[in-house]
Image (cartoon, rainbow, N blue to C red):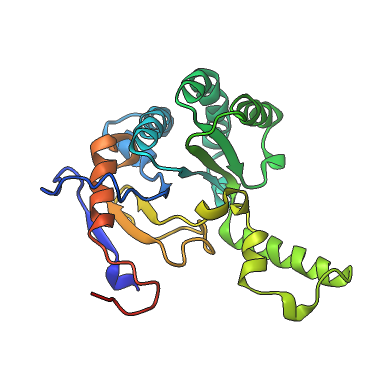
Length: 258
């Protein structure tokens, strides 16, 4: 329930040490606050997005070093098209710049790139950068860096329902066979197998909402809201959020046992 959600300023670390045996296997992050970070420094909003890209690089390596199996980052939502054209155009260039400079480090750290969302609407250059990164890291067997690009949680669920309906129409499935397991298999995270659902969701910049992100997958995730804007989020911030997660008792709707 929402009463469990905890907001923290991760500049004040917990005194307890991080339990390396209890690292969330799948961490999802809503990277919020790039524009506000820039405005606070009297810079154009795009400067915040540029700095945020550097934070992605740092957090990717930090998460990989901690043993995280999947890091999902909400990079561009279906609603972000409503932003000013200049900002959207800049955001469309970021994946190109990011992968051009970071793919060698991803390969060095054995990190594989995955993308969820409808990338067919992205500019051709952005699509090429995405596909190239996926192909270039395909043989990596370590952490999966999963970008949500042109992604919306409601659309994902609608698309899964359409696929299930088509299976019924084609006679490959009966209505009674539609269950949670089937719908889960039709979600964009299904290729992640046992790691398809995040155990921890982090949102930066102090906002306390999920903004149409992974609505199906976050059903039993722990939520941690931090006050730092995304460009200020660092490896210590990540560790502190994980410490909060480690202090929670995940009951999945049941009763806690001693």
